[in-house]
Length: 469
Image (cartoon, rainbow, N blue to C red; front, side, top):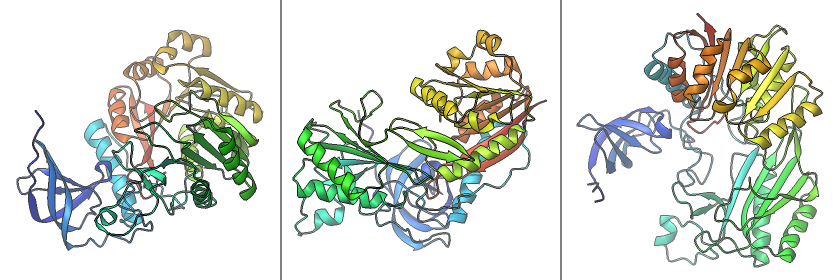
């Protein structure tokens, strides 16, 4: 039987913290925690709850009594509906404070390990327009706001090109202007939508699995190159080429114009053929003289400028002299491996995604780096005693796992090898803290450096240096 959630109103509630998935944190009169989206610490509000659990409530702000001095006016007109950039209403210096606090709390509470004095979080120079990759979805039945639903106005066409409403796989919010990617991103998106409507192209309907236009990806690089990839559902050559030719003529600065015809139920492209329609099938990113070839399926850190800062911290923590054998676990496309290679004797990278390893090898060849070797395979299976015997025992391990952290077998293998240093880069300090606890018997945490890669959101990266006791 479904659990009934009786709605309650709590009056004059002060928001005391922020962090849990970007939500504000308050306390109910009975002591239970309340999670509030779009609330800022220092707000005093009336709360209407919509979910009740044993240890917490979830609610929304019903009325303001006091607005926090930490508040600021959001830049984006879509704030609060789009679901991205949940902290746009909080001043940037306060965002950094709560990100740092989250990292410290996780390492202390979950890790329960001895910690050094924390280095202050490294903020991002760019607060907006920092992403190098954006993905937009087409829809023939755009998300309507409550005001639109209640109005008597003719709502015009229902086509949308924008973002999924949080928690709704089939609802797309039409975006006028996004503040995350530099132009010509907004200009390209707007032009594509207008051209498609003008020519009566059918926007996708995910419920009925029909339509011509499905998604659009735009990638930009610090070198000024641009990739645009349109994903089509219907395989209609004439309409497809009409749109692609328009893009080619309207935006001659596009370096790579590609498309996919995807008739699967989902819109992932990793098992699809990507066709290069015009220009190259890749763009280049550059970092400290190193070039990285990026294709439509490549993974690359989405904030290029701050990724450079993150990698510099990683290299500084490793403090290589030129004689070390370095393992780079979860190497992705080998960016960190190549970034530290000139200060190491040899770097060995391991990654589960075969295509990423092919990219890593190609980029190493492109950069003339000969002291790197890359292997593809599931980390817990590849990273075994035979692997160590074949490649040598590392002096330093750099690890940058996904949000779930490292598999316990991988942690155990690191303990078996016992390198002098481990540099642990993480996008989730909670799972990082769990792994640090597992390594505490052998390693001491000597440096901690949080890095803000994603301003206006609650996400935060963290770099930890572990040295043998």
